[in-house]
Image (tube, rainbow, N blue to C red; front, side, top):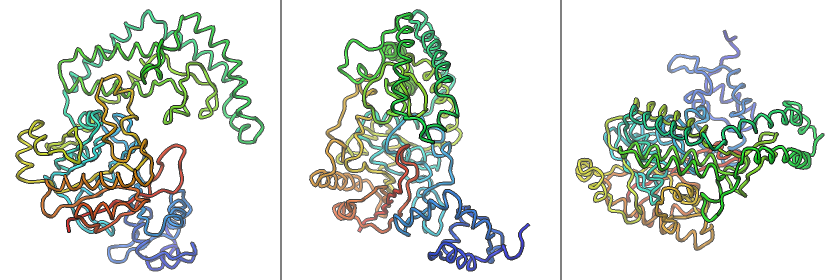
Length: 528
């Protein structure tokens, strides 16, 4: 029950917020908070009212504070509705979107926003409808294809990386889940039998027991972290001392169980970044996968293996994203504030990811529509899309030739930021895929100098010029980019297109270590 003075009209709320924050808050700003559920709407249609307390609570909340702070840093044109801050991580990584790690992917809600049939104060028209064909020429992990399927649209992806194509196609393929589970169970049984004589499981269990006792004594929770915050402990010095103190316990267990820590060679990624025992387990599962006759099931289980081995690399928990040096012994972990260990068997992660994959595929199966999605492996600068579609699905290729592509929703690579082949080196090593690093546009290894930028502009321009040959006349192209070098106006001009709108969105929680204010632009391009 609200007292009368707590209820405000939108105009009153605008005036109050302007006074409270010491900066202009328009009626449109207040309407936005209502529309996106930041504050409750209390009045009837035509006389919207809100609670002053609701508004005060929002401005005092974490996201309310962050919105104001980021707008101060990045500009008032920042569209906070596109932050999707109301979604939990489980929703931004829903169903098949978390089948495999991938750097640089956008969240599905961003794709939905521009592809679906809603309009609002920012998106004033509908660009795509059911039955349309959407193109993603930088398909990556396949997010656009998956969301197009949910929305009843066809989608074509193109990616120069054969492994990226595998990820995307595995996500949108339809499986016999009973047969998939049967193959997973067979391989798991075989792996357990393979491990019978290796003693790695027994070794890890004993090591965990010793770590538990040691950590309880020297890194008690929550006292240890409290003392760290108070500055009573020099973390680097104390951690190094305890590493040395535990090492004899670790070495004795290694000798007792005859554990071989390193491989005999370190020539490839698989040789360098995995313990000897895990490397043997990887090869064992891979040989079991080769026995599978169903091609789609073989590929999705290969993807489970890839996801598993990525989590089993010989590195510290703090260095998972930026591999520094292989580690084969116990170590002080600053991330967890205790002694941790590398992995010596992949059984646990294999079982975890296998179960998770089947569940996620089942969830997506209930949402997918009877439409076509598929990723082609090739260079978007010159690929003949319809000819390649002929090989993948002649029936859909015929429809695509007749109907043509309505437009693009894609996130091109950012100049000098990620090496898209290198991030999955382990998979290229294991599966024997041919790498096409030299065909990447704007890769990390080329940097962000003048020549790299010119090469990037040329590359993206060539992609758009090639793709538009397959478009309807009134096409819509949406490209997600952080254009800090102001390259996209030139790219649009080179492609014979014009930027008709820009949507500036905040990007929340980019990485664990980088929480700073950051935005990207969704460029809307059309033909001149």
